[in-house]
Image (cartoon, rainbow, N blue to C red; front, top):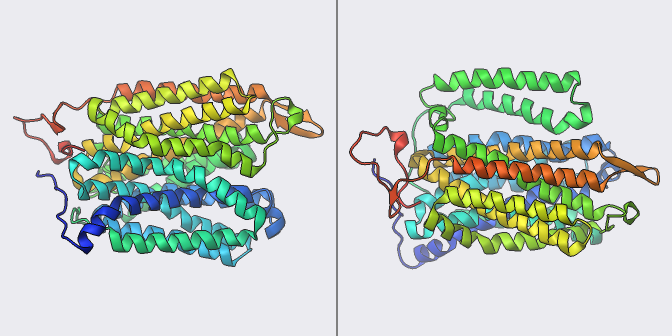
Length: 493
């Protein structure tokens, strides 16, 4: 099958749109990450501000996680079928509407529903990567995809201190009015600057597959995210996990028998795709522990003997160098992938993450060492996250890039959810009393770093097992044999 080339542009407005495509899509990715992060500084105060319990308030995070996990593969598939720009714009609109709802209300039910709407923005990165694959010539594609992947970390690093500053010096609704304005700008920019791709996979949308995947993922992620609060052996959590197993098993059976499935499981079962998804899950686990544990560690009271007692604003500034590093190293990742292949970049990135955790274990008392270790982890994350979509783009047909990258992002999300639960379990079992409050011990934090580092090394090993590209000049060498459409690789991705 002939691979689509870059879409020709015209002079004038068309040339300007061509130059703005990458910055506009990157802005959308950063905005998505900011939206996911801005609620974090609010969580301690929201019970007082809304009159709801702390457990209910936590659903403002859980709702976004669940809806994002469900909608990412669904919207990716919709983008492949109905147009990637159209679906991308719709996701940004839902994100912006959710922000407006948060700005207008203090009712916790409305806030949770609004945050669920904002979960649709999780599909922005895979959809944007697919657009870049369709729009750009091969020589520009690698660096653009790497930049797009790094926007997740950049936005998270920017969002935390920004939100903390707004919350500290203004009414908390102001933060959501600000993000609403940024969201409206993002929608307008995508509508104007991004051209709709002609690469489609026509057919009927798999509604039963979407509903089955949604039900299975909700059971799985709800059990993982609430297990610590409800009890891992409680009837609710065990029931959720059993339900996830049954529903996802039935969904798998249904997908294999559907002519146009939501997720092409035959494609997923191939080593180049399946192992990339496994590496994504492990890398997501390893990456997430960095920001999660660092934030708690530096805010711990000085009375613990290791804590620095920093404010949320100061904590955000500690994580900011990692975001800057992700921006700077995205182009390095693209060059390594072009020279050695994305699986080597992925393996190297995961190994660098493990080195960052080694630094954290060596010294987690001095602020400069904490920042250094966190920044090394962010550097490795940039290399790994930038390589993952390139691996997927090289392994799947052009008309399935958005859905395949959506599944890869889903695996990262599941890894992050499991990481959050695992880190919480480790810290809960290693606490001491400071005054009358139980606080995690330094030993508990070091165990969490060791766990994340071990998972990162496993991700590196998994990356090396991914079959390499038999390429010459970026074009697969598979000649002289009949290939089914799933074996078509992307030229020069």
